[in-house]
Amino acid sequence: MDNPFLRSVLIRPPVVLGQQMLPFSAYHMAALMLIDSPYAPTAPQPKVSRQDLAVAAFVCAHGFEDGPGLMFPDLNEDEFCKFCDPDADFEYENAQFQTYITDYCTVPEIWTPVDTSATKTTGIPVPFHLVGVVLQAFSGITRAEAWNMGIGELIGYKVSVAEENGADVKSQRDYELLEFKRQIEAQAKANNGTA
Image 1: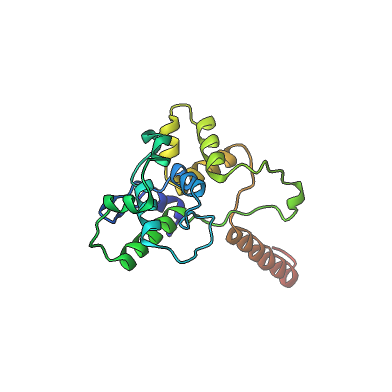
Image 2 (image 1 turned 90 degrees about the vertical axis):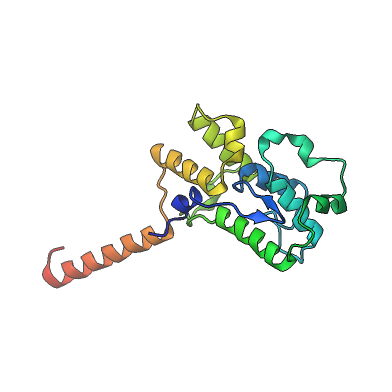
């Protein structure tokens, strides 16, 4: 069974530019979005530089508990490279980092209502929403633990909370299988007079 929710808790973060990455978390997503990193999952993927990779790897090697000072150090991008392996193969390291983010951000498609006009949104960034749901639902989790959780794991918890609260959360594949079953039952009923 290939289930991204289950995989999300088993991913082993790589070493990128000589730094051990932490699980790609809501904190990392928010930090990369804040600094307009081309590695932010919401950003277009333009050509990235060694400096872009160094900054993103530096951010993802640290956690929420390191504090917001990490986001605004008195270092320029060239100085970030001093923290990284200067002999590293950029193409390989870039691919490792891209795979790292993709692995942590891959989740199954969740069915959403066709009538999206009924859906209300505040515009809150995804990382804040996920962390908020987890903190609200699980009283034993600290802010730092929630911000450091992998994105897929946070989404898994959010979906479990939604299902527990009665939400109709199904993948598109689930709906296709239900429709296929209805068609078979209708055909059987038409052929035999019964289902």
